[in-house]
Image (cartoon, rainbow, N blue to C red):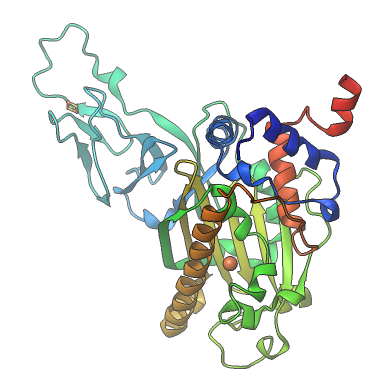
Length: 393
Ligand code: FES
Ligand SMILES: [Fe+2]
């Protein structure tokens, strides 16, 4: 079962002029090809805004955490000026990571030869360097990555010349404004490696169809797959895809289930009150929302068959403060659901390697998956629409 990169890109090109309801899945080889992954890393992950966590992970001056972003060693740190920065952690002397893990500090002291950096990255001390003719303290700050915040989330972009984040989020922000995302706080943090290609993990996060099987005894009870529908196609700028799922009738009103809507529900439309709403912002950020709640995930490939998953569960701050027991119950539920999704991904990861694995048709509950494939096609194979190829021949 081999497919060349060229074949895979031609297959991707097919999505450019195929309507959602006529789309098949990606070819199984798209989930196992190291060549395609290399291209995705170069053209997508090294150029796009990637969610690396939340501002509330670093609430105070000097708070920091470290994260590997596509092989880049990054420190996310709040400076004494209150600004959150993303610094490269490689020491400007001989490359030792100046800090690991997370914590709070006034300065970073490199464990190798004790060069010391301020929390904004400036070098402030370098013992015994006066004998060097090329040492210039000012030229030895830790380099900075592009970092921008959105509604409490932190995104970084490895491309120094990338366009700003805000236009990428604008359409989705308009579609989700009643959910008051900026008023939410994280009550459950999730960070794992899932065994499977990043696209398997991503696709799993963007459709409610699998509630019928995989989550039949968890969130499938509250949001049965049969209630899935695609709202009007989202953004003309194609920055995201979305779908909704009606909640079972007994979960819309007062029944005492930990996943029921709680808190101040004013400002939400009837549709928002009675459905789950999933938005997937290309390339790798998703939020599954209900009134007052938000289950988010961010995906980063870690080799062809592993995915770094970062995520959490958010509640409106007032609910989190007033009802810690509710926060606990919901966290327990989400841990279970994420575990089910993780197991599914590792099962898929085995079978996509099969020599007999073949593309399957997508259901009308999976328009999001078709739109995701089309995003990949626009980004990686924009000149390979079948009509263009015929014209070129
Ligand atoms: S590598 Fe950091 S002080 Fe030498
Ligand atoms: Fe799921």
